[in-house]
Length: 409
Ligand SMILES: *Cc1c(COP(=O)(O)O)cnc(C)c1O
Image (cartoon, rainbow, N blue to C red; front, side):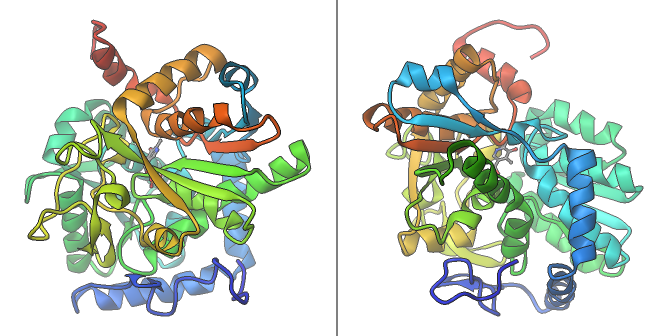
């Protein structure tokens, strides 16, 4: 981990967890001691070589890292412009990048002597990754999930149960991911002694956004080395999809000080950012406020009520975005755009047909933006997108969107 470098984009957050005017620690007094204990342990772990040795061992032997950096030759040829590379994090154990972070938090929990892990999940991907690592280490696992999501995401609920986790349907509020996160925070305060709260993205109160970023930064570190080996230089453009922003932060972070590298985050545009809240684009279509212990861009109405977003991709429908992204947007180090469901679906299909890769709907958003800009760029321009998840989980959604009848959906 880098120490403070003069004028570096990688110095944040400050000691109060702020990235510029974003982030921070907006929590109740009852939660504060837990957050401070976590911060103390993480501060120690992040400079402890033993901690990172254990991470790397498991990344290699359990997750399957490093994930390949893959040149998408046929897609590049079809688009007729920039060269497109994919960072293949969909090849990780459990099919997405989530496990990079879960491993880090659970190794930390074990060092802290915690035996019970709680998590929130929306689409179920983070819940599955957490249940997986808990099974591996023999830890109790409780996953809070909006009641509505429990219905929609039956296969992931069953996976979590097979892995030995208890799934708690959340009916408070509107029974969504936001409410599941609130219930998990409540559980944490009432079970202080043995419980560790494993957050699934670069959100929550400090130190979570920085800690999750540090665990996901392995994506960008590998990409940098692999790109140097493949092309002898850095990519010109990085593109990643954004739900809460963890796969994107992981890819972007090691490149923040490479000013020649353009950085683009892609939010879920749903039916269009102009359509009344039929999207999940927190930066493109929201405004700053406080949720889950940090200040960031949020989907909210005129009274500051948090709105439920909409996207064809369940993994992108968190109503906020990690505070570091809000700051990168404000200081204009990164650009944030929105891609619609229709464009993501088109990219999904083209990726299947030209590369033999069935992508998750989340990275299909990133790919759609790459497809949008690639044709107008010269052939020496290099785009690298984060293929952060595989699409097996999404085939029923895609079938429905294409009007295809399929059994078992
Ligand atoms: C969870 C998930 C996302 C969204 O989360 P981020 O924190 O924004 O990365 C994106 N893609 C996949 C495949 C996911 O599982």
